[in-house]
Amino acid sequence: MEADTTRRASCSEMGETMKVDALLPDDYRPAEDEPFMNDRQVAYFRRKLLAWKADLMDDSKSTVQGLQDGTRNIPDVADRASEETDRALELRTRDRQRKLVAKIDAALRRVEEGEYGYCEATGEPISLKRLDARPIAVMTLEAQERHERREKVHRDD
Image 1: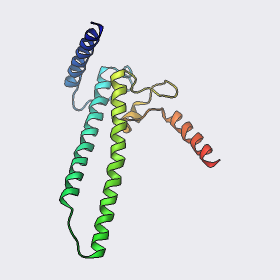
Image 2: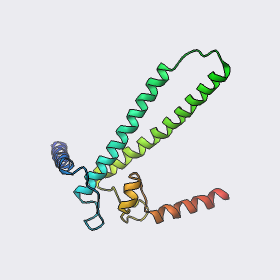
Image 3: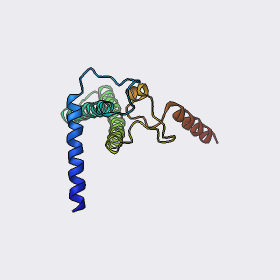
Image 4: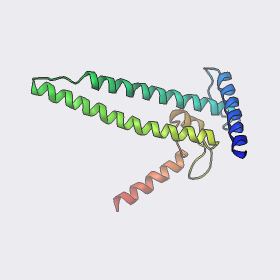
């Protein structure tokens, strides 16, 4: 019985989320003078993350289609090598995008759990400018810089 109540609650929350998303104007930009991660900001970043993911998925589909259509026998060795190099580069790019999609999915989970926009290291709000530029950011700029300095020190050992 509790599971049904929980499921209904999350469904009604999703309904509220969809209402806020629908009411969000296309030209809305989060502002520093409004409460941090209010419904409009959350809807803005959710929309941004979903659009980014959709673009990456469309690119991925076109790559798969291109690889399937592009399989042909090229007699010239130089042309064949060039095509194989292009194909390898495309596959590496798609692999990076696959990893990016996983990060976007993680950010969307943080949005749904109410943790989006807060630094994993310090718990402080991540600046709106940073989130707008890199919506998958999990740390404030200062925490990220500290993390990278520590990584560099340990890597040099």
